[in-house]
Figure 1 (cartoon, rainbow, N blue to C red):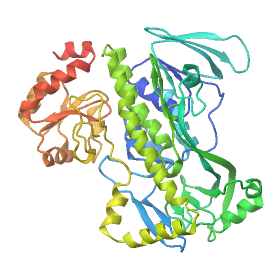
Figure 2: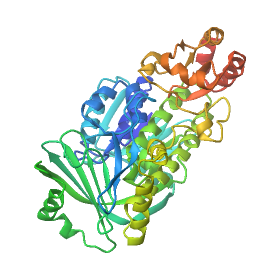
Figure 3: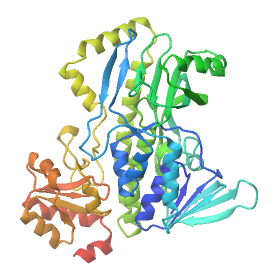
Figure 4: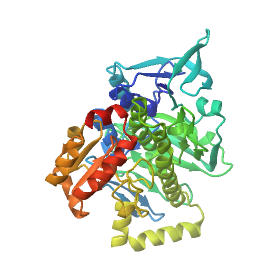
Length: 492
């Protein structure tokens, strides 16, 4: 296996593959990891993936849990638009990070994966797709001859300007936002009293985002108007004046101030033969929902076990489910980010008045509570590698949804296929087929509330099949059709 690109998505994918025992070579053209922060937040789904590689606690040690997020109206009134309920997946739903610290944690862990090799300073030159493998030529960026590297699969995790995607001539469809933003990262001596959690400041004159990062860090973002020269806003004195507005005795040391342009893009396809795309190489989204790295991490969590199973002999068609599952979810996150961005970036007075009027009207109502607690799309898939097609309405799905984890259930389940049950008959049937079966504990309420007695879980903890004792047989038949033959023979 070759991973091209060793940013955070490539690192996480390499860790997952390493834990599945897949021999993996990760290459990157840069000699050192990027040292400045980019991604600002992660969510509970991503922390659950980190848990699967044993790093969730280490990541949280360098992070800051956020209780929610608010929009500040033009009149200065803060209205909650996201409430971080904890418990369903076992981790905080909104966590601010320092990306360099998170990457250091992952890179240190990669040193302990004997099946993973990292080579830096290698630039991808060509990709030659074969029927049963991929040939890659890579050249040292410092100079020298290109070398042939062959593998069963290649995954491009090499970012927005992906060399892998370019070699495959896959269009990168979508749009670039007309607005540019100044992004300022600062070191702070203590949390800012005025900004206890992320705030979207809806000023018509200058929309702003301000959010705590990991402990000791803070970020500000200011929108530039069309045609506006960013140079005056990047002057150190101008940056310090803009930041000073938000300080009440705290000290802020500016780490960097840069101009960003945001994109909403999706690769026309995420696979050609034995070459796949993941993370920013496959999709880009505006930052307003904090889902850039999180979406790439979900790609890694979805793809790693499928590649491992296919390498063990599972049907090649299993890989097709990667894009079928992930593309609609990424598109939903892009829509959410655009929606939030539209609310924040309003500059026309009538739009600002309409937005603020609606926010103030729903504040304190059940509507606001429901929106704040459910603004992020549910972690479910509408189709893919499941025993039956998931229900059309997400709220009604059982198959295709991420099984809950109120404690640390996943630590007991391990990293392979498993089942949970509250019924002895179902337990016996599943165990007779060689499936490891566990008592879900408090998460058994998810089964009881839906009239179910068991659920067969994929390695990424999505529900492959579920039902009562009479449904076990058909679920096992569907599982055997996609499981590696060696595993089926062992359990048969």
